[in-house]
Image 1 (cartoon, one colour):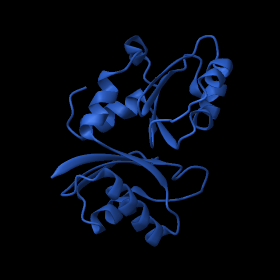
Image 2 (spheres, one colour):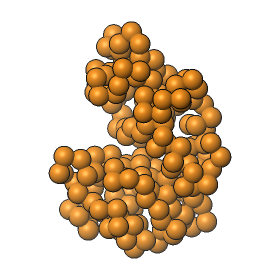
Image 3 (cartoon, one colour):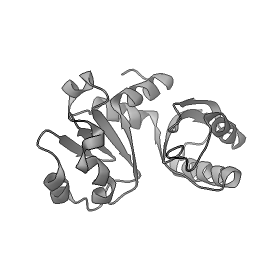
Length: 180
C-alpha cells in the first residue's frame, strides 16, 4: 500500500462546497482508500491505496465527491516523497519560525508559462517567493491576508493550486508519519 496526501481547494469556505470531514472520510473509504485521516475543515487528507497512479486516484476522488455532494472539488494529490521534498526544499528556513507567514502553493502541474514579471511587479518589498517545480513558496511577513500577490498567484502561475501554511504542511507530514 502506498500513502498519499490529498489537499482540497475551496471546500467549506464561505458556506460553499460544504463537505464535513467525517463524510469526506466515508467517501474516500467508499472508493477503497484505507487508513484515511483528515486535518482541519479546509480539506487535508492522508490515506493509503493499492494504486500508485496519483492522477487516477485524484479523478476517482473528485468523481466520488461529485456523486455524493453534487460538486467536484479541485484538489492536488501527491505522494509522500513529494511532500517530503517540499519540506526539505524550503528556500526560507528562517521563516519557519513564524509558520503562519510561510505558505506553500501546491500546483496541479508545473506551470508551463508562469508570469514571473507579473509576480515580481505585485509582490510587496518584504515578500519573498520561490517556484520549485510544482511548489511555490511565499514568505509573507506582513500577513497573507494583506498580500496582493497571494490573491493573484494562481492566475499568474496559470495552473490550479491550493495553498497551505507551514504549520499545516508539517502537521499533514506528521499525520503521514514523515520526518520534518
